[in-house]
Length: 346
Image 1: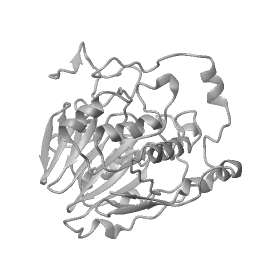
Image 2 (image 1 turned 90 degrees about the horizontal axis):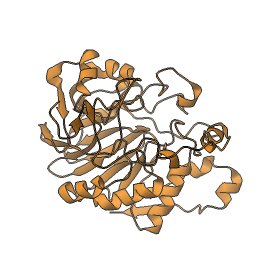
Image 3 (image 1 turned 30 degrees about the vertical axis):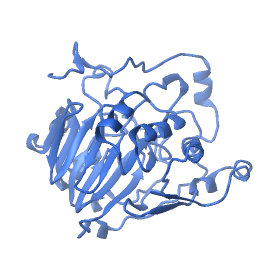
Image 4 (image 1 turned 45 degrees about the vertical axis):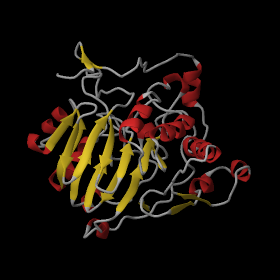
């Protein structure tokens, strides 16, 4: 495969990256510990109306978090679906640990329509769901994926001409949008024997009026500053913040690193994603957002934490965080936290 990042049959990160940085027996103990890994009840959620996809305003830029890293972007009349994982379980074999917290989605898969583009960050099950993609394939006009991911889509019945497979720093023009595949610090694989045979990527989405960034999965690294220098400042960044562990901190960011990544990217605002929907790590379900929110306040970084299904208008000058996740925290924890609603301004 023609890529500077492809050597000896495998893709490689820009800097040395270990999937497991250390091993300790405490990992096993932590995996069985009962530390609020799942919320006590279903998370609050707003339902997305099908009218959202009809006759959008050509000046609008709106984002809807569907949960985990799945999002819908409405940008100047076009609709983009990011990391379409709308299934019930993130595991190839459906274990309870990988099950979705909420039984319902903000919108039923069959109600999604008029999708101009689907962008996929990498081929892990919690970002690229075969059943979701096959159900939506006839509604999606184009796909943008990292190198090697295209072979999966073609195997699932997607026509080759609908797919743009990109290396890092390559771009494609789709419906007056510039889509750029940019580096991330992660890995790929869907089985025991295909590790790093396809690329992983973050993405820049540029229109005439808006500049957005989507991290996919990534450990913290030098690439954030590189992307910020080359394509920033960004109006809005959707950044991984969840499913991390100190034992694999080179492939997933810790929450404070997520805030630093927003700074490196020169993003005016950012939204934490990849949290609050599945239990894929040993931290409590709300630790990512609580830590990132407090760190963002400390560093005066604008953070937006919507409910699933809530429409976030990027053009709106301010946004009031409702701190909704704190309503699901144990009472002793909630009492120690500030209850005030906090607004962020561009």
